[in-house]
Length: 140
Image 1 (cartoon, rainbow, N blue to C red):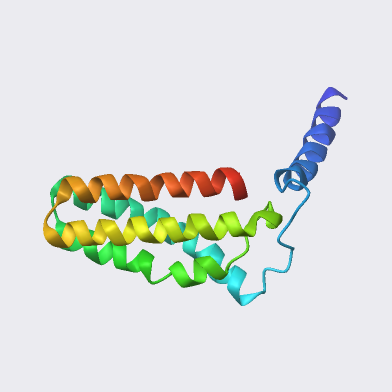
Image 2 (image 1 turned 90 degrees about the vertical axis):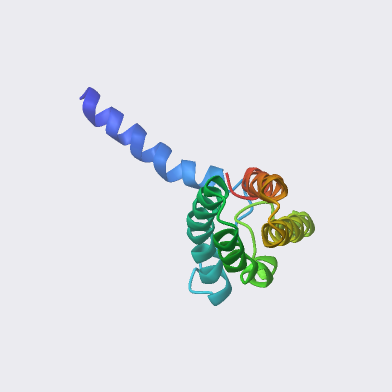
C-alpha cells in the first residue's frame, strides 16, 4: 500500500514538476520547428566544445582553441534567433546574453590567435559565465 502511494506521488510530482520548471511560460511543445531543433542540438555541442577548449587551454594548444571557438561562433546567429524555454517575455535579455557570449568567444579565439593563453582563459571564463547566466534565467 505504501509503495503504491509513493509511486503515485512520484508520478504526480514528475509530471507536474516538468510544467513548473517552465515557470508558466513555455516555448511550446512543437519541437518539429527547425529553429528549436537547431537550438536543442547546439547545447550538447556547446558542452563538448567547452570541454575541448578548456583542455586545449590547459595544454597551451592555441590552434585547437581557435578551431573549437569557431564551431561555437558559427552557431551564434542561430542562437540569437532561438526562443528560450522560459521567460519568453525577456527575449531581449536572452539576445543580449547571446551577443555577449559571442563577443566573449570571439575574444577567446582572438587571444588564442595572438598566443595570449591567459587572455584566452579569461575571455573563455566569461563565456562560460554567460552560459550559466542564460541557463539560470531561461532554462533551469
